[in-house]
Image (cartoon, rainbow over all chains, first blue to last red; front, top):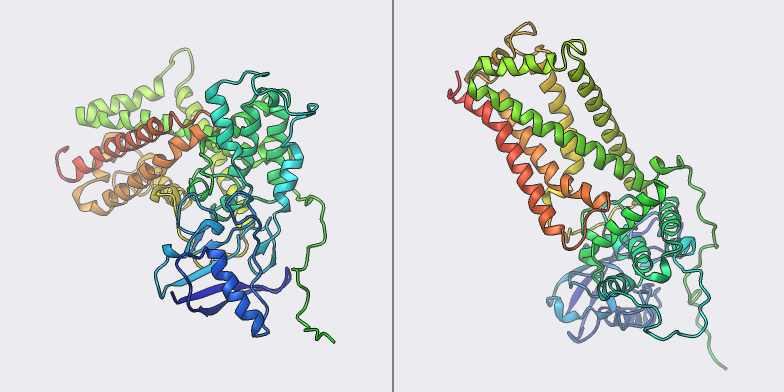
Amino acid sequence: MNLTLKVWRQSGPSDKGRMVTYHVEDVSPDMSFLEMLDVLNERLILEGDDPVAFDHDCREGICGMCGMVINGVAHGEQRATTTCQLHMRHFEDGATITIEPWRAAPFPVVKDLVVDRSAFDRIIQAGGFVSVPAGSAPDAHSIPVRKEDADAAFDAATCIGCGACVAACPNGSASLFTAAKITHLSLLPQGQPERLSRAKAMVDQMDAEGFGGCTNTGECTAVCPKGIPLDAIAQMNSDYLKANSK
Amino acid sequence: MTATIERGSATAPVNSPKKAPARKRPGGFLGSSNGKKVVMAVTGAVMVLFLVAHMLGNLKIFFGRDSFNEYAHALRTLLEPIAPYRTLLTILEIVLVVSVVMHMWAAISLSRRASHARPVKYVAKKSQANGYATHIMRFGGVTILLFLIWHLLDLTFGVVNPEGVNSAPADRMISGFDASRWWVTLIYVVAVVMVGLHLRHGVWSAFQTLGWANRNRYRALRVTAAALSLVLVVGFLAPPLAITFGVIK
């Protein structure tokens, strides 16, 4: 496969950045998207050029490090797939592919396609935890949890914090991420004591970071590699409302 | 001897660790994005309930001019003689003005927040959620506001109505939508369809914002929102179209 890439190049946080066109030849359809970029980077290094910086770690779709906006869609058009699990067979030979970083003020570009997602860490620090002695893992049946609650909590807990929801949201909102973290804990018995204070602290931190508000467009859940459902946001809204009406 | 190639640092420059940004914003519930959404949901609900009543009242024109005029008069004399003339109507007007202003305040505030959250736009952006109605909410809101101003000047204050202000409500309505003023009817058609699209997203969105939605209810909520929008569009367009095409004289 021969491809034309239009890649966002930005040498550092203060650089203005621009799109640069590259041609990549002899791409195997079995390569992952990141492997295709590796091929490009190897060539750039050999030519003495600066390789395209992008985040990645496990390349198994579970760590949440990778992520780029491919042809206008976070993680590309393949549903429920991280960039590392996206394969070149989904693209046509001779295609032009646009690659951009997540674009949001709270996610400043570090370099090229790498953005600083510390804002998510601070949202977690604000309340994404349970204050109970952890100790060793308890027996699975020591605290009974309804099957429905366990399933819904697990759906939310699959969030890998990649930031695709923010990237896709027309408002640059982090509602799906924050809601997933809130819902994950608020559906389980261990999360009950801090349920309302958690929702309040995390939503307020989300606002303080400069993320936009949710307008229920559903763009986030459509691109989420883990398919976090939109009703997590309803759960967050409900908890936040209760926290504020006390 | 090993040759060293100067290629710059191997890792990307790391931003200096920063504290949580101290963003200036009004504190409290109404200062939060979620709080503003609740304002939008509640004021929106007030306006939707008003629209349903307004639409039902309009349909009185199909029972004749007198029926419509009596209904308009009754709105003003409700609660009389316990309360003075126009008490209930004035209260309703105040509630509506407050709702419209707060709905707009929250919308403008959230739009500004959204544009600050994405200072650099995408070169390519493709929507993945199917929702034409969803993506024209802000544009639709502005259109509806402009229409509201025209509508009040036309049928409430009579400034741009051929019958003027000192006329019977039914006369203003029937003269206003006369076939010779077909463009007025056209404005109404465009505006009412815009209201319908606004509510198609707005109604279910309000439930989501208030935390009353969940995966088992989404389908029902969307169907309800679409049905309510359709009923309102048909109900509001029936009188003007009937007048313009000479069904009501």
